[in-house]
Length: 567
Image (cartoon, rainbow, N blue to C red):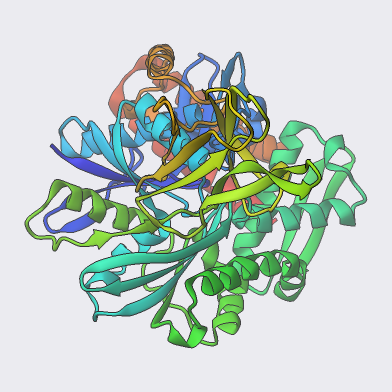
């Protein structure tokens, strides 16, 4: 049985596998290593994923979804035409596509995967990721933190004993910083911190907001198509500033063309608030791990957003040295998770390594504190498992009844760092019966067990009666039972997915539609003529003629794209 590794990203996703002694990134149906994490519904009601869906962001924004990883574990629903999907269901389409790519490449059925998750993902987000795997038809026994996967990819587990290193992982939508230590064949995560709503997309947003502000426009005034076109221009400008000193954002409106020029210095000035947000988790991770900057043996940059010069410059100043970035930042996590998948298969050519992880958030319950004279202050957070505790871990606390003849105790579970539960996140609640007695004489034990995959089990037991209640904590609104997952799996299976063998032709058509909307006058006519000829060949189903016409259409679209970029 072959186990694959999957890096399920906010912007792009990758799949890898251990082949001939190395972790190999598997190309998708279009021959590319990166698959955009975008899902769309086409005019036939079929699901399209990846680059084809990405092209439809501008032409069909109401039927296309992206950046949904940020909402994993929540009840936020995305409407794509007549369909409504939860974030994990959209992620399942991405995983299913990667699974199909792996099966085509390896020539065998794939049933199991190791999936990477941000280190700062909470319990609900991790459970949603596992559900996405189940909905995609994959067995997911192991989730691997992205920074740990990156450390494995860099071969840090093969270096000298007692090595300390920091992983700075800035992806498209999430930011993680992790401090790890290697000793005696054990790679231990010492601390994690981060921001699940900070990534490269936010730097793109700075440029889009600058454009709107410069032209005194409100985003709410723009149509969905214009908003997506603006976002694309901002993304292109961000990429241009990574290779050059300045760029110009240009957008066509009904009343004419609007543009703005920006140089790298101004972009860095705009980015200062986001850079400040990046610095705080770094400081917290160092403080929690009780590690000083000078004690770190290596600092490693991971994630596509670290390619921005503003990030490389920022991290160099912050750490007082140049970070390591020898591996492709988009691929490091996928390579590492592929190695972990091979370790799970126990490949003979891989040295076994013990990996530990930590609980990223403090987990606890709500209690009341006595103020004297029979008065109590309720809603106080009582930590049971502190953040950055090494997992797996099991901790128990004993609590007593508060009033006379109390017959039941409600035990709620929160995650967060505030002293008041109202400022933390409620994960779930259990109620257990106790015999009536004077206040304080009846007790319950509350045990939290947190496993390597970040899944929390809560056990509440009455000390006197021995009665026990157990719950696997799930987000109330989005938790699905095994039966519900099986039913939803059938429903998703019934939705047609565009055949992967025809994706190249579909991509050309989607790209042509997008460029038509971005073009004017003569360019539009050139696109129409080329696409009509191509669609005519598709109807005749002569593969040789289709291939020849596809090459002609691609040349036309490349020329139009280059013209628009220069213009």
